[in-house]
Picture (cartoon, rainbow, N blue to C red):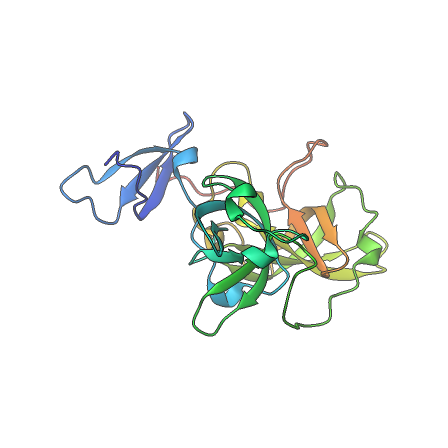
Length: 238
């Protein structure tokens, strides 16, 4: 129904006109499947147990309270940016800093045992410990248009971790290919696109030395090279 709500479904084919045919888990008396635009789709939520303190996301403010703001950053639950973590200076009124619908950069600052998330809009205000960040210095100067060889070492609902090796073989490190960076178009199921042990071609799009995290992409950049070394998909069913 056209009521602005999100409903679970499965993409069954690309219609070739900017829409995807979606089969609904529960049609509730309506059509069993229908065309849906990409902008009306949402990737599966990130499981809480896959989050780490210090990870950065772009989120959308869902509500503003006197004690802070709740932000949707793609996880299974919204996170709270407490008023003390909105800015470096003292914040008297959160409404002076954010509003509902606003996109904001947030970092995970706390993951509680009860599943609640603490977020911060100030990178320096991150609590908790965590593992020692990986040394990614050797990857910092790599051109974002340069294609590197990599091997998929883990596949999750929100993306795939790929171990990348520099062309001269001097260093290797693991980075995340987010589901939105696997290929052009909407990716409904990461497991249908890549598998553990698969050799792929990736580009380095961001290196965070402080956090020891690297973001990768299998999508073509300005260079226009092929995104990955994988066989063409079997579309005979469509």
